[in-house]
Amino acid sequence: MMFNCYLGDGEFIEIQEKKKQICYYCHEVKEVDYICSNNSSHFFCEDCRLAEPNELIFKVAKRGVTDIIADLNAIMAHPTFDFYSPFHHPLVATLYYSYLCTFNNESIDEGMLQKLIRKAKRYELGSCGRRGVCGAIGGIGIAVARYLHATEETVEERNIVLQIVGKALETVSSLELPRCCKLSTYLSIQIANKILTKRFKLPILDIHCFFAQECELREKCPFGG
Image 1 (spheres, rainbow, N blue to C red):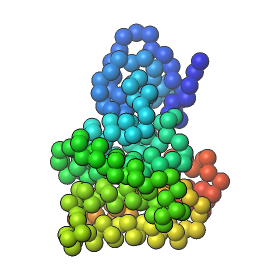
Image 2 (image 1 turned 120 degrees about the horizontal axis):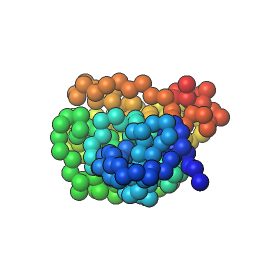
Image 3 (image 1 turned 180 degrees about the vertical axis):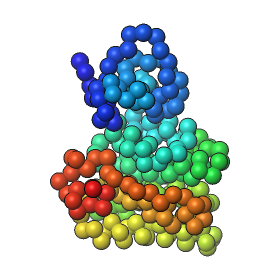
């Protein structure tokens, strides 16, 4: 039985000969059993194929995130990751924290990654409607606050976090679209990079939704083109 590659480039094909390769998710060298028929870099080891969402988020964040959008897309495309789910909340918090650490050549504390996942899990599914705070946007606040060591008493850092979260919430509400976890995920990352670029010279991200073909409202979405 054939299965489609998670990233949509082809089908998984079984490899009979012994061969080792770097896993796309965890970046560990593993024995290859299945690989994408059209893109040899799309090898997902058995451990990552069987991983639950928060476990996969941790694995990717731990090895360091350089291409934040590619890693977000790869995790969101994993078969255990529901299209609408509260897993987007720790996804943003943990991967963006790893991204900032990697960009600034700082070590990644595995204990901190677990703490970020626990914090972001406090935003339940539908918190955008029930609390007025989108969990993915709350996740970006968690990531930036932790990286900047922001508290209620650190004026500059606190204001940066509030600016990012406030701008993201204002922007997503102004679009007047139904809830979309992908939209909020992309938007929170894009806005954080724009605001933090003055401090860290982060790139301005040009984002196109990996899942746009599945969306009937893609023409109204800023990432649907």
